[in-house]
Image (cartoon, rainbow over all chains, first blue to last red; front, side):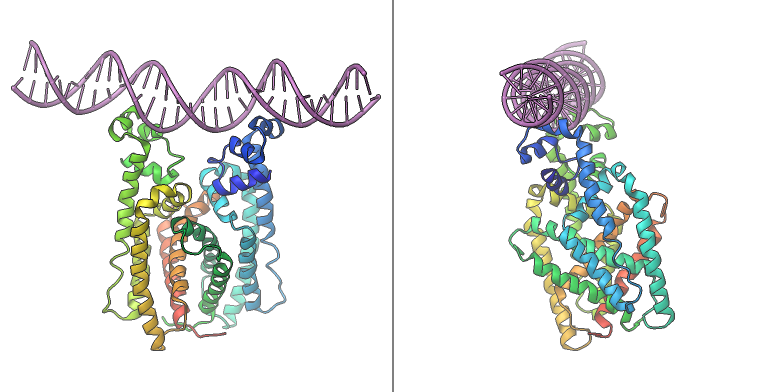
Length: 198
Length: 198
DNA sequence: GCTATTATTAACAGGATTGTTAAATAGTTT
DNA sequence: AAACTATTTAACAATCCTGTTAATAATAGC
């Protein structure tokens, strides 16, 4: 299973073969089919595990008592830190949605639910702050997209950059990502609290 | 060639077969090999065309005479508009870098050159503005990453989102992307001109 | 110890993929 | 019209993939 997870996360469903998995696990590929029946079954197991973690990561963001910015900042940081523990997840999900969306169908409604829940919370929170005039007037959806795309792309594009330029940035991922996290938080903060120059 | 381009852009190198291309073009796959020899040759032609356009898009950003913010804003907008005309390009390049980096090797040095050139220009421009105290103190690299990742992910994640939720957002891409462009520009602007709250 | 279940392998079937080739077809030249 | 060239096709080879199966080895239960 761990061999399968590594390979599926790196190569996605279509480019991973049962023979590769078997090879990495040190068994014959007939074994895999004996225990898991089909490649899809193995994939679903890997996907399940990762989707559970992903969906779980949507929860702990919302603590209603804390001040607005603290809540939002910790939300961003939590999301970013989660990705740091699962750096291959964004590209993996992206790949699966892109090339095997049928395998994601089981999660569609749950994802929609989670998104609606978190967006509802986010909307209310932002609206209240805007009404009180404490933050700049902004479309909450765009703000959410800002956070999500900034966070995700940090993890999707950094490995791609290194594949192209292996010389730079070898091993100092940790620091790069920490810098990136700070920048993203600063960016969102200035979006909400900066002067309106228009 | 146009059939090949469509398919390679949509599915990448590994998931596109010469039979698919032939089928879409209405010929037998033996024809393709007669004229192009190998699948890789066809791919290289498609990649060449798209990389030329991509690299060309790096150029017109730099007009040294205009005011700082106008230059930067038009740089962001130009980049965004270029992607709007080539919406599949980011995912295509991402895919190629990820799974077939050897096919990108020919462009590596040219990409590096373009990046260095544009970064040099960007650094100087930002530094001058910071020294004059007209913008907030910021790491120019992080700012560049902000722009690039925000722009790219708008085009990479929107199609993915629609694959998951086909119901929402059908056909209104244009408006969505225009909104997104405005938001990205506003985001960068507030990053540079907003109050320093730390 | 002996049987029954489980684990493991090698071999294979069926299908798809890339690329080749020899033969047939169409087109051009003279 | 004849000869030559370019185009197109069907068939094939070699390889790889998923999944099955029948035979063998290991293990457990009694």
